[in-house]
Length: 144
Image 1: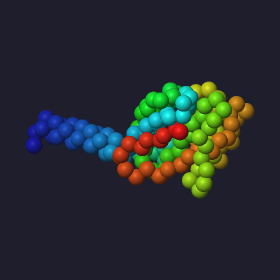
Image 2: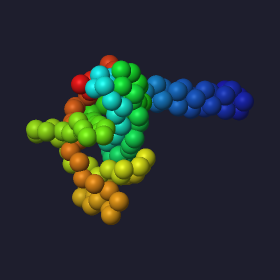
Image 3: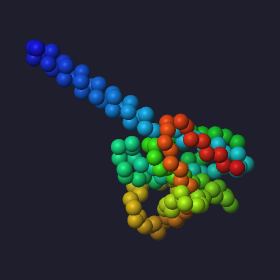
C-alpha cells in the first residue's frame, strides 16, 4: 500500500471511530421532559452524570416550566438520575429509598456534585427524586 493510501486508511478509521463513539454515547442517553399541570410556574433542577463515560456528578438548575406546558429539559446519561422542582409555596421533593439529598441555590447554578459535598452558605439541602433510567426512551415527569 502506498503512503497516501495508508494515510487515507488511518484517517478514515479514526473518523469512523469518532462518529461511532458519538453515536454510541448518544444511544446511552435519554431525554427528560417535564409537564407542568400544577397551575403555577415551576422551576426544575437535576443531578446526573456528566456523560455516559464520565461517572462524575453534576447538579444544575433552574429550568422554568410554565403552568400547563411541557418542556424537554435536555438529554442525560442513562443510569441513576435525580430531579427536583419548586414553585412559590410548593416543592416536589423526593421521598423513599431512591431520593438523594442535593444542595441547590436560589439562583441558576451548575456545579460538580462530588460525594460528600457540603452546601455552601448560599445553598440549601433538598431531597431530589431518583429514578434509574435504563433505556433511551424519553422520561416524562408530570407535576400535579
